[in-house]
Length: 212
Length: 379
Image (cartoon, rainbow over all chains, first blue to last red; front, side, top):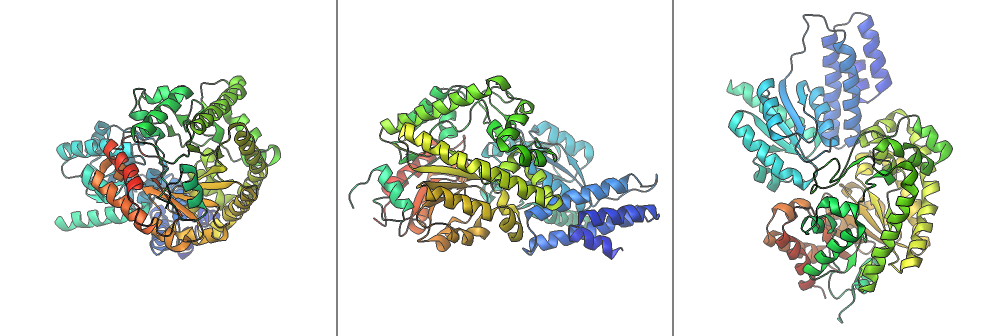
């Protein structure tokens, strides 16, 4: 474990973190170990956000930093090396809504927390989301919406998922989304902020493992 | 207490004086358009239709105290005035869909230098052709003139009907201007990667835009007789920052700008979306009795009252989700709670949290307006 890399990521020192990764890769370090260290730094960022010491802008920056590190590392992975994800998640902003900032932050944080994410983009019809969940074998779907006009498409998407992918767990998020909206659309959980999407996914994956 | 006019109510609320009943200023334009005989595309294309649907909606619900957005808030130039692309009904979207901002990155890293060297207006002119609007660049100035004329006509229309009407408005104090064209993610990463360039751009924008905004306001008010109230918009972007960055990139420019506008005798309605709760204390530094803090349901409006009581008028905040999914009973109860708590001692304007959504249930909209008019525990 490289404390220096964990600290650079945790402190959001972009230049320093990228330098360490580059130098370590050149020295022949194990890319998977480097990735694990970067994730450790991301986990620190998440904890700081939860305790109120970091802010949304810090989450955004950490996501951008992790994306760069993951890109550098993936090009150096050996043929047999594979990053084993914690779980697979499909993410989308639902039909009729084109906002991507909230969804994008959640995607980066989930990737930083070792999830494999299939990001379907914005304005995504229900059938594409069902298809994405079915073909990827994801156990979790995250739906985002910034406008109230997203509520009915969310509801329709969830109804379609319940029919065609009954074992999938569904979380929703977005500025206007409240507990009443969660009940209305029939989702399993509501993420009050980007970081809580990671906590919800972790809880579901742990429950899945316990169930066997 | 004798019955007040809408104008008297608004002015009394801003000055933190007693009112006969709480003033009501909903943002009803999108809701009105969706519930009219016209499509959203018609409303975006035609200023007269836009004004007409708002007027019919106003009459259908028995009216209220002021029009805070005199003309339709969006037109066929969409978000071009902010250097941003947009998706508009009848163009990228269906005829009856709601307009939306396109969050793509328009401003590039090298534009920070351009803005510093040539100014914000020159930047907006430079990027306009890349935004994909149907009005050709050579017709832009003429179209902007038509929009201004439509604003004037609309303000005069409401003034002639005896309805209080706010005068013009614009986007925030540098930071928001950048976020709209650079994207929120682009701006946030720039704050880490090139903070000095961001500060220089903010300074360039504020130096150029603030005097221009004040001059535009005065000219529009002189030609129309609108209220001495203007709207300043801010997204939640400043609230995404750490307090340290909030104090570096937003607060000093915002505070100085507000003081300059207030010094000109102009009252300001701060339309502040997002969760500002953590930053309410800062607003105590702004001039007392001259501003409205308009919240959209994401901030804790009751906390705002606790902190800003006796200092700043608060406006809001029937949440969008409640208007579109809740019952009329829920809306009534929530409005009563707002009037009981936030309205106590004055300094409160009842409104939808940001714009009432297009799918607001008509009975919920009516419940908001009628509760505001009928429920007067403090008068």
